[in-house]
Image 1 (cartoon, rainbow, N blue to C red):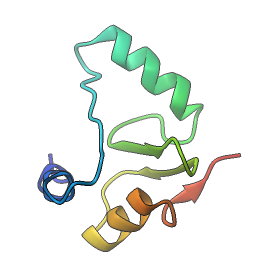
Image 2 (image 1 turned 90 degrees about the vertical axis):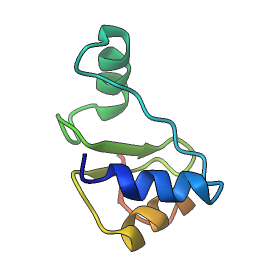
Image 3 (image 1 turned 180 degrees about the vertical axis):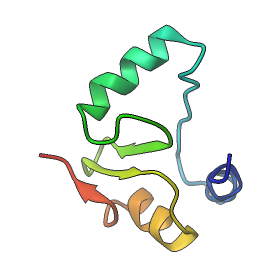
Image 4 (image 1 turned 120 degrees about the vertical axis):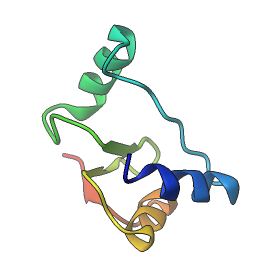
Length: 77
């Protein structure tokens, strides 16, 4: 919930961010597991499918924006 305002701000600026509810939707939960591959194991979990970089947990706006641009977050292996 803490990240929601930052995500909405970036989306409002035209940044493409897709959100998936995983607590009550088994299909979305399975998709998260597929992408997570043990990197986080929980939410919030952000993965940039273009740059293959991810974020676990909450971050500030600067870090989230860098992740969205493909330069921030941790690289996947």
